[in-house]
Length: 348
Image (cartoon, rainbow, N blue to C red; front, side):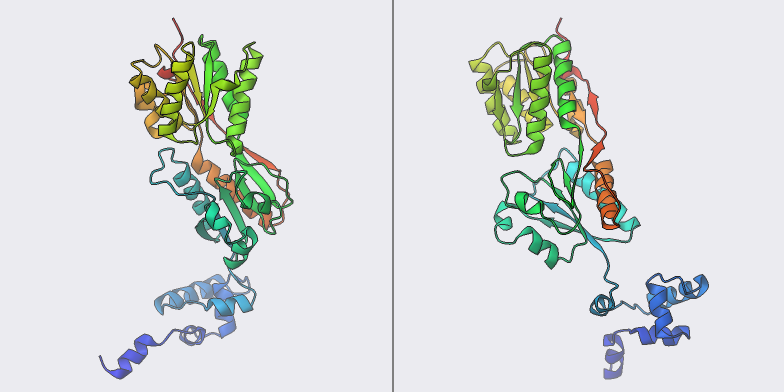
């Protein structure tokens, strides 16, 4: 390859090159590629095809100076990324957001900000550095640094499973309290009277709501709420196994576990098996989130099914609507379904 050929390959295609090839002005090229309506469709298609053939990429710095910077939304994961996602929530949420971002021609990025990173860079700083137009936050706990900072968000912010006062903050979630109430009531209707709760994480609003639904169902049916029967499992399967075994040994009368997640429920079942017990013959177990594998374990674990993809779509539509200046309710409720399976089979 000679020097002249290298110069041709290394030369970056400019808007002038596209305009020359199309036989139009540079202004017409700019308007065509940026969606202006003063360019007829035939000309626009011709320019787009030439730009693609010449591998023309608009200069982002120039676009910014001209006020045509592309809008960007982000999914911020406020916690550690797990090696596996048996719930499918993370994948479904991401897919739903991405689909809407594509349709609306928004840039979409994913950020991970566990608590230690939140101490190093503020919520406002990360939004400015990434030039975000809107943001969706998943996994936020009340003891995280960003919890208080998000209340004063300067850009539209949508929280998954977290309610918060703030002019630019909205929530997308299922009614966790109501769903939990219905599941515990299902246990009671099937003859279980001594129901313990294996909760998630104390500083997570979603755990509080599911615990609230559990207590309300017991109270409605005249059962005493025993605080010593409610234990925190950190949404961890192995912790849940140990806690379930400890509770059952200490209080043999427990005949059912209501669990804040299916991971916790699987841990509880493992614990009961280690104690030589069967589910549901000796103790019933109910979960939440409806993992894909849940319907195959012990004939199926009773659980609350959520719809992560639809939740992602709702989050993205909500943040885009806020960006557009539309009025949006503080809470966008999502559908759920109680999946009744063998693990809570009615007592004989």
